[in-house]
Image 1 (tube, helix red, strand yellow):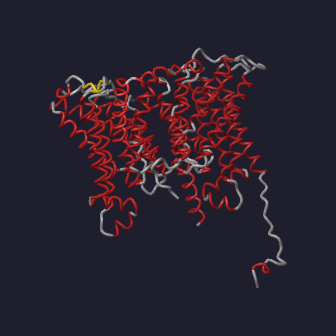
Image 2 (cartoon, chains in turn green, brown):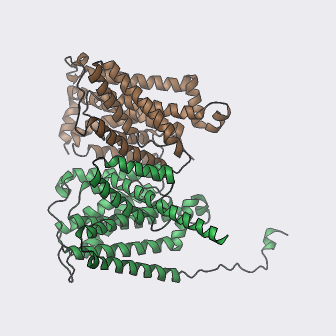
Image 3 (cartoon, chains in turn cyan, red):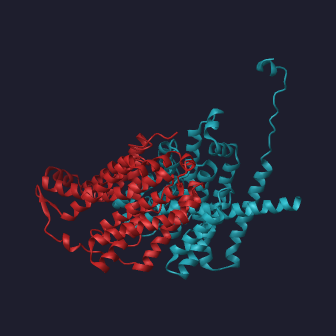
Length: 339
Length: 300
């Protein structure tokens, strides 16, 4: 019997379709609860520093989680993801300062600019492999940083965008009010995380995981690897840019450090700290790093040594991020309890 | 942008000589750092992100030795030997633990040490700018070549770096140890099955790389100011050099370093604010047209 004959008369394979809706409802529910908790926070704790902390967490959290879409889900180790953070901050700040359009218009326009820039840079970068991809993204990051430094008439050079970002109130939302800014940041964070979660859990998200695990196999079953990588590169850039915009609103300006490679380095570090195998790992990492930074800077002037030792503990000691560790620990306990 | 300045410099031999020598010393210092980086990558297959720290330590070791003994030769020796020892310890104690691990883990260990080393230098030598000062033997009037000013120390610097390049190139190509190192780069499992201690080779190569970076730091100490974190910009530039030249290629590192040195020195005339941008632009162009660098081997 030939292979063709073997296929005759057999039933077409039933592909079990998983109903993704319950999970989606669950995610939306979690997001709503998280937003409600964050929104109620100022009523319980009035301290301004706590609200500041949450705003910074929103900015860095969106950035780090979007980087995880590249690093953790697609296996693209980008060393220049911070360029989109800087691009968001500068794009938004400049738009508000020079044109005076309403905030939502500037927001959308910055996202459009980010899409164009990310598509051009991504189209060049994503065909390179591993370490070369990392270097080219780093080079583009530094190129953007140098451009910001040298284009003094537009960006203010190494002084950054000064003079504050105007925030005209719209529909009763006044972002120069600290509480309004806080609520806005939380909303952007929760919506951003929810959208990224949808991307990660969609068929496209599973395509990305497949590309990470074996790009050759993915392309053999008919997936356009280049296109999928480019798509996620642009999508991730959009969320990073949103993080940059929150940061620009928070500090009411934009500085060249936002586009410096250290932002990308911190993003990678946050991902390692929190763990790349869970969706919320980078968020946990963000909170950890910011707390660590704040406390260590307060305690000692040599915070590099402390931070370095903590990193070594994670890299050589645990060999994984905190959330990875917790997830494994829970799985082990469950196994023990069952058998 | 100031293209007139660039054009008028290119037309005058004196300016041409001055700019070329300053480009050459930038390039030679970069070469010494980058060749260590490329060597470590070629043999150990790790990207030593903390390589700039060895450059920094070399400079500080040399300064301290010079202040204690007053001997320039001893200062160079201290800079090179101290960083070699540091490299050996660093590789055996920390890097060797993450060879099998993810690239990200290796980078993180190095990143941790960039932070730690910078703070250690800040603790020992203080956060302020330091300078070693030109040794008295070289405090002589500069030479004039075609009207261009060339300090004699620059010639020494270029000579030492070139000698290092030649010794390294010949040593790797001809000597027995060089052959073992190349074999270990190619197939470490086979080399270790033949009864050669690969751990020793890895440590040795890392120490050699550290030593070259330390030598670069020591050579740079009389002409640059010393500050914690000084290794970082050098590291980024030597990355560009290795990427342009091709990871793992010594000749590539030399050509890449000279190109970057010349781009820096002439670029600072024509595009004073965009000098760094020019380097990154050049790197992007090279990588896009030849992803493995000018002299890199095609990796499957």
